[in-house]
Length: 567
Image 1 (cartoon, rainbow, N blue to C red):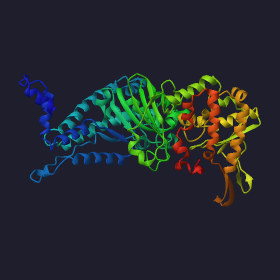
Image 2: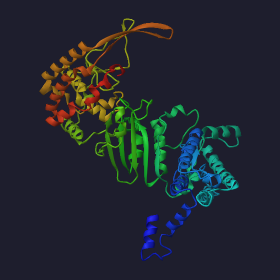
Image 3: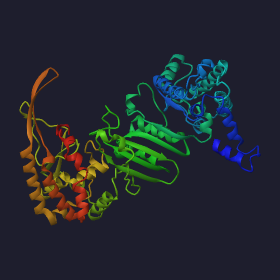
Image 4: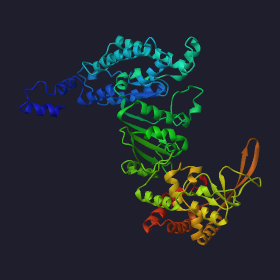
């Protein structure tokens, strides 16, 4: 602003009083404050930053941090009154305590309530008029804090509180009725208000919502299953309710609060890009928007220390262009943290997004590899060859770095008795040849890479067995070689396995557990031989085969993978 005004004064138009008059007015205000940066930050805090949290403690900490940031811009002057420090801004109406998910987000929701109740006296329209009038008072309240000494009469704030509470109470009455709570039953109604903590975005931030919504919404929503809070509060009307998780509900609410060209940034669990139950969430976030999704492992390092969560950061741009971009699944060491975000690389995956899975695609090389797999296999997938046949295959559900696939169950004995466990899953095949082919495929680097790109990266679920392959074609051409490799691999991994015996005490009993551990990384050379056969089958180039064999090799073979027992 200073540069524009200075240029104007030096130009032939310097005498034009109307030009840049808004800039001039702002610069005049700056002079009444400790410095320009203080004025800028104070204006931003009052007019541009808003927040809601269900925890009152979090709200107070947020306000304190904003105050500290502002106070840090002031150099105390002993000559001036109060050391030259002006009153801190009042942001009680900016940073609010309340339930993000309970309450009316916009006027359309409020009008829907009125229409459903034959709102003959236009109560909802009157609420809108009162909210608009209250917004003008809010604007004046904030404007006064950047003018003069920044002080605002206490009685003005009290009046604002009273008028806002009256609107809140009226909307709470309508919302309680939707929840089946009668206002006349005062104790029940008071308990409902306390547990649900309704927050009506429409009246709390009326000016923003009537202008279309927020420009930017950021958050790290709670990763909590909805049934765990249902005893405290219920939510209504969310499309993402079938996901049964609060983070999905918060993401949906964020979309509802956003303006037509706004941006969202949310840190969500990896299940948001890989779990079937998250289909409604993906539809909400991908609809009429561009999305950039970066993906993060929890080993060897993690985004949040102490939280063993696989995470995805969603950046959503609401612009009706409908494109999706994704990064690889990032595994990184702690010393690389400062370089993690600056080195992110996104690949477009719009055409690859399946019914509910968004690939964690490293680059277009990987995309070409799996396109070749799909082209050759056609409609055939691994799971279509699974039958009740007696040729069995066993795999560990939990996956960290290596798939563990066996042709006989491992030793899992409790007091000498083989004990079934949920850790192992069984697959049946009609022929030994198909069983051996399935074993080699699931143990391959190719299958592991596909799993990392498409799955939850924690446990094997049924969709993860939908790998494109025609086992009959594979065994017809390479059956003898495949069986030879399967036998070699099983002999090697069993020879390297270890059986540990431990004593356990649980539920007033002591027992001895014998458990067999496998170290597939030590059989990497055999697994690489399997991938060479698969490369011939699918028609991979030498470069593509090298890409598959060495994909994520640092972490699959490095020190980070030593503790195989965690798998």
